Image 1 (cartoon, helix red, strand yellow):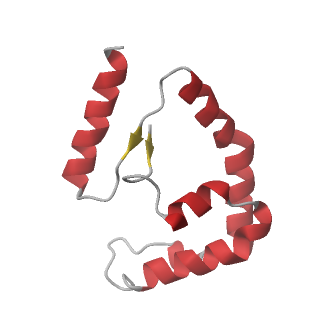
Image 2 (cartoon, rainbow, N blue to C red; image 1 turned 90 degrees about the vertical axis):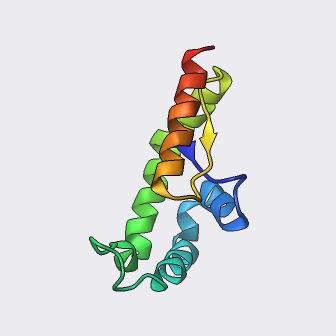
Length: 105
């Protein structure tokens, strides 16, 4: 299962399609997104410490290890996209419902 939202926003979609060479732009988006929470997250988020090098490594790992699994599980009807823009309880309920739905197939 993947928490991606109610249909990916343009930025979420961009992350799925981001390539290693896009790392500087991805870092910029991450910093803008998390700047509004600076000092408010407990424990503090490490997002503001992301660098092009760390994002390059993450993107390379995603494309090498995770992306093939998305196609594999999707082709078998075992991939559900769970909307993640809600409070933790709602996302948990949605995730459990999606897993139950897969089990019933």
